[in-house]
Length: 179
Image (tube, rainbow, N blue to C red; front, top):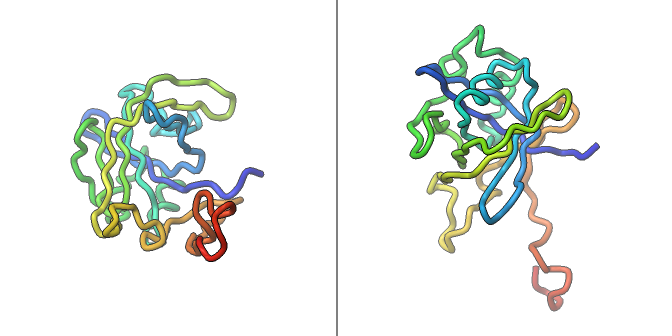
């Protein structure tokens, strides 16, 4: 019941073949060194690609990408070319062979440090090698403007948009009138 979850598209590559898997079990693990994790069922097509190459890219999703995000979660790369079928554009990454998804506002290049076998899913504990952010979502203060990217989350089989800013870190202890 720990919902909602980020809905991300994870791109991977092996021997020149690209694939995308939608993952809702993804998260930050550590700041220094920067690390994140994704959890994937071993029977998924992308699982083998990631396990063998030890590389992938986490691509954040948006309201505009929700249809592609869903498609990449229900169709198998064994059967279809998800980049072709969704119209998503593969872009060369800097540190890994897996492609970035050009339409994504944020792309996070990762190298697997450890695979933890957990049960229905295995966790890929990974180092973050590089982060790419679409400049159109960067504010004048150099801060990523989440609201303008219109990110989506996943909860019990449904996708939801995020939007309303409710506060900022420490606002509960600041003087009245400040957010």
